[in-house]
Image (cartoon, rainbow, N blue to C red):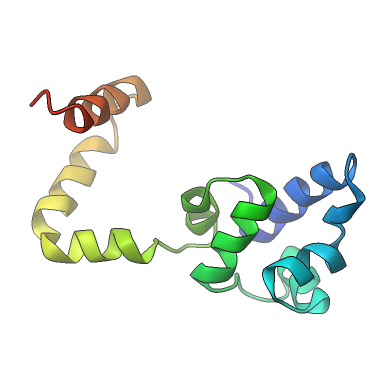
Length: 117
């Protein structure tokens, strides 16, 4: 699995190939970090930024924030809060789901979301 910085650079450069506003300098400005810092993050010379900055990057790059957070080795604050309320139950659930195929997990998600349980 590629790391956070590698993935971020790949996505940014793909966007930049058709839109010059996705240079390191301009993207950094839009998310509120220094261009040199963002460049170092992309090259793996700095650890991934905060959840807030990752969410801003995800928004600018039209990426899923949870995916970027996972690549950064992080979990969003709202998920952490949910897990803390029932840690044993959610730990058991995640461990049971880890080997299930995606279609089965998606079916469960739809059932829970639609109240079919």
